[in-house]
Image (cartoon, rainbow over all chains, first blue to last red; front, side):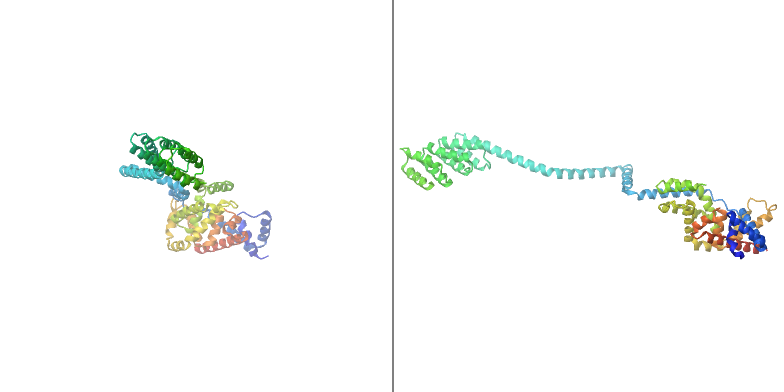
Length: 271
Length: 183
């Protein structure tokens, strides 16, 4: 075997890493090879001498430098982690602001408050205003209705006519208004009031009770003007149930001749 | 041996307990400094490099897998750090005044009594300085860091046989430089 093949074992020998079998192999070679014996001995000596080679002590600042580096590193890592830490920092900054510039801080708070208030009322106010308008409209309606009813009771005929005209402005006339108008139609002493009432009720002909009231009113009217006007309205409304009432009216002996002819004509047109 | 505990500690660092790196610094900053000093022969540079290695171990803690020993990982990072600075370091080493070493090594010793031993030590020191980087590296790791050839093979990422051969060649080179200087 050539000496070079033992090189690896030399390294193991000086480092005291050889297994017993390897050690035996090397020893056998060394017994017969003076050159290798000499080389290994000098190598062993040099290896031992290396123990004396000193390494200077690291300076004391190393530990503090390391601690500083570690803290720096932890801080940068914390900064990287999420925005929650960032927000907290910003809040801290705002609080600092409060201490450094109290006036600026106060102004900032006032501005923010106004902004919030503006937003709040703008959002909430819209629906509130609408509701107020609706309430107001209802109140005006109720007022008009009350006024109309009150005016119908007024001793002055012209005021009663005003009251009747108010009822036409009421969009959704309720039963109270209709009853009042029908009562005026049948009982009001002034024919002009009754005529304007008839006109007002014609606008409310959509209500069945208005139609019924008008038909029932035919026999109660004694004025030829009213009888003629009702006949016109019945024709206009094509109210067939009124024929029976008109026939009864024809039975009245003191009925105006002109009215009698008009009613006869109306009956034939309705049938 | 601390090896099992080293890995456990490093895994804690990896999990986010960064303060635990302080324990590993206590254990390893001296050996690491020793290795880096033999590779550079500059004290301040070596201290800077130690900090850099610990910084890198923190920064790249995710790459620690605990499949190998912590120290192997540490020396691998140290070697890479050296490589990064390699060229500039070599320039400086060449210009460094060797009298500085003479002064430093003789400090604290009584020259008259131990003159001969000191001379030999200094000669060996200078001889080591003249070794090629790869030879000095393998000798430093085996002799001063007291690592086994198998461990060095892990760090250098070469076979154990290659490490042994390199160690033998390194000793031959050292002997030749040293003997030349002595004559």
